[in-house]
Image (cartoon, rainbow, N blue to C red; front, top):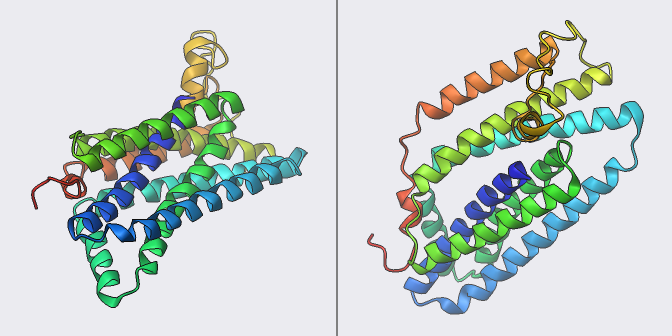
Length: 280
């Protein structure tokens, strides 16, 4: 539940901030009549995301045995790649995304093509929605569907509230700190997904088993009970991992964390400036 909550909170807030920047700029330039185009784009993106989710979850039901292991392993490894790209992309775009979006809105208004605002919202929200579907599918593999659903709904609800409050100017969330902390947590989550994906492909015979148990501490912290079960669901804890899982987990975690944290001082203030009443 925790990982699905974190995923939808971050993805939902990213989408809310992007839509908020566009709406706030339209409001400040007396173009509120264009709001409807933005909301049409948002609605289309949500519908596409729900459809993609239904297709992915329906597809997995068609597989069994080795094919199911291959499909689930591929989904987890793909989620790791997309999640890593998303975290690093947001870090790189943090200082310029607000100005970039406002420039695109201004260009659409100047050209007299307000439908472009709908496309802008559709692409932005659709990207976050498709990422969320992929991550949620991977998260369901390490927790129950009910837990993942509850966590996902709570994360989206909180993201919507925070996005609305920031847009209205009544909340001053430290976005730099928020995205840095959630970025680190998502990297930890992705490391667990990577190890789990490696394990699935080992079960399918795609990746060889080198050393079945590097260590076994389940008698100290059992991966299927209490704290061990929680750590397994959130961060991919394994009480008796195989060597390739350990190499993949450690290599990804330390390499990605090093790259991410070396630029963790990037500010997200540019995105917050889109809120009405904020100073340019």
